[in-house]
Image (cartoon, rainbow, N blue to C red; front, side, top):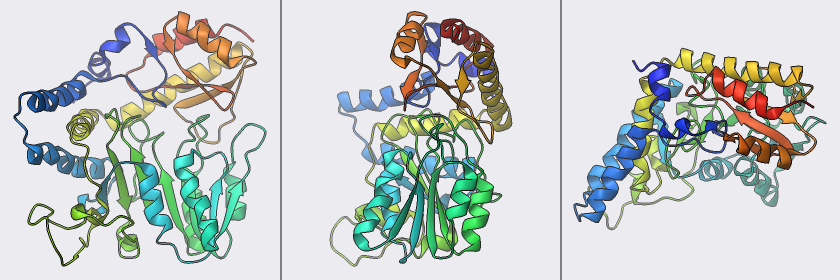
Length: 368
């Protein structure tokens, strides 16, 4: 197992920066960077073995499945969350779709587009804190609801809904649950056996430490047959290398039918990233991330700042500040990397962060 101290040492950028911007993208871990560099060197030297490069993608399938408690056959290799959402949207029977208005657009626009097909799409407005409380969502999950779409952790401010309650209520009315896990997986745990969501999609370049271009799409086995392939291609069969030409079109019976064409240089890095995360104790990772976020939240409150309220603890904290642009500049002067989203200062704590990062960020924050 890799200790958290050893894990931190694999990120050279942390020698210069306090990195609290994993919700946008973390810096590269050395094993991930080296995996990408290796295939680029092969390309430069003309030693192109694209089959070998794609094997890295296939090796990531069971690694990702293990991360969420699924089987490899339940996982598709994708390029974005929106493409997975669009496939689900194209597969739904008529009915109501419930989604929060402040969702990141990759998990919003595919559902809003359903209005053109006659669906009733309920956009739940955010409250004064910029969040859609779980109870507000539960109240809208009524008979006729065919899908509820939500982020496990909200991108703009770190709000974390009670996913178990949403799944229970949605399944009670015969609906499906689509989860955008971009802002949780890699830091927080999700077990699809304990929380039986129907779909999970996530990109790898945030908390999963991967290069941009690698994403995964989980389809619950009971939903696989009904989920249409939005863009059938040569990758949609069980053995795409057997023949590249002609029919018949015999799509895979597994989630592989949703596989996208692979970005060759992204997947070796994605495999290395998932192997690195697998070498950590997942409980310890989640505990570290939540403890650091709680310490920052408490310290910001002591300085007079108001954080976005939470129902469940999250590793992302949104802070209400009067002049977020000026604050970002002040943080930058202290080499603290954070972001402003939706008018909030947004900070996120990965397992490579430690208490010194919290203290440095709070000192830079000053007082309200």
